[in-house]
Image: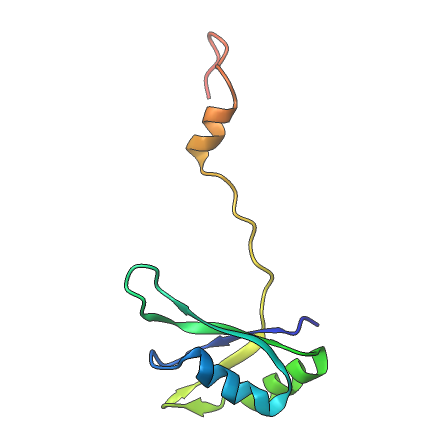
Length: 105
């Protein structure tokens, strides 16, 4: 198991410090992050917490998933690995070189 956790359905007022305080009861918190919109800075309603070990992560999931916080039931589960982002289609086309005469896409 991965010791990085996804925390969803967060109220917009929940901070990084709030996440740390909530999870430290279940083990060592390596890092905590509340994701925010780049333009407005407002919370997106989810975040990530990295625990010290798989066992601590499992305990946090068991204790906190479904727990009510500010009238919202938290979603706490193992985080998916980050997706590898590729280049856009236009960048791919630019990198191919010239198209031979008479050939179409």
